[in-house]
Length: 540
Ligand SMILES: Nc1ncnc2c1ncn2[C@@H]1O[C@H](COP(=O)(O)OP(=O)(O)OP(=O)(O)O)[C@@H](O)[C@H]1O
Image (cartoon, rainbow, N blue to C red; front, side, top):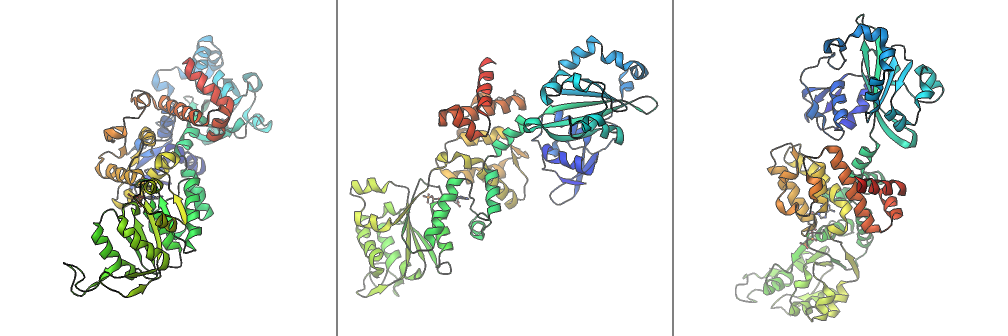
């Protein structure tokens, strides 16, 4: 079976389950074979807790089908002694002390599938007590409903290691890896299964994926599937943004003038284009003019056009203004707050009556133009300061749409990074990934340049990072200063860092929602679980 190199460990576990395979062929984007991912590699990755790692990290170019079978004899262990006296060994204090000190659950059966031993961690993880299962055949345990499926029986049947992901009580997810131990005669003497609870790890991963999940749901509802979104390369990454675009869509069917307000780079121009695309004017021109970037006298000439010889430097033939060019379509006046007062008066006439005169002409021209304007300035304040005309403000502001800055819709940051990463990977034919701590760091950043800045940094990182994975060390300094040093400490294990991240999420939620009840609701975990995690951290 083929799997792509950028699949995660977690994603490929079901392949082993489904295909009952020991080895998966790893292929690159073009489908070319590049190596193997074996069940041995899988077990190793699980032991390391690297479920979110890409499989290519654990890929090998040789497959030794035996390498994952524990060859006790090779380790100098007296296997015959084990075969004959294993019950004594398993019940010795020494062995029990070792096995009970493990954090992972251990389940041991004999070669027939009769339960010999389970350790304390197994009892803790599954809730099944040793005394309930000891001496009982696995088949019987399945019949009695203790477990839904026996890995040990599968190991005995297949005579090889088996790894499965399973869901047990309280919706907990566990990974069970069963390994056969062979006698010299080639019979299975024991099956040793290890059980690891990965519920917390997965929960965190899914939280980290954040509203990517939400975006996918949107796909199902058909909202994001809308071609307009693809055409404009725009992503709807939160309910807030969805509301915004739904409002824009409703407004688009009318000719109402729209005033878009919001910081630079939040997507005002994009929304203006979206409205045009969704309106009946879609096949007519959409013209954008940046009132802040063009000198006042030029804006006038640009907008209204002029007659031959209207002013020094004018074209001898005269010139059609944007208002004439855009007739039937949409005129987007960006940075309207920068429009000089004298031009505001002239614009008012167009806005009110759809009529204007070219510079140097006395003929009144009539046009059919929909006007959308935008500004990053506080226009109300501009009114009070006398820099913006009140009559024009109210004419332009029939439907106000305020686009919030990115740091007020933080849940969009990670989904947007992921979308932009895919976009630039495709554009530059690369396959970069981004590390969890790097994502966390970026989600803590304040983004003064909003989505434009985010887009630019992702493109820069894709182009400039040599490694396959973009990590903290690749981020420019300004993106790191807010980052919690504790979390960035690379000496911490993945598990510790994930715990730290979990705690950060909880603290953030507590700060925002004040009560553990509300924070628990938002994070989708129980209130008791929040209290316990915070308490545990304090004790640690
Ligand atoms: N929801 C989104 N999905 C994808 N890209 C987006 C989204 N919102 C904004 N962008 C991108 O971010 C960049 C900045 O957006 P845009 O130019 O619309 O911002 P703006 O608010 O008009 O900025 P300014 O006030 O500086 O003109 C653009 O490249 C735009 O395509």
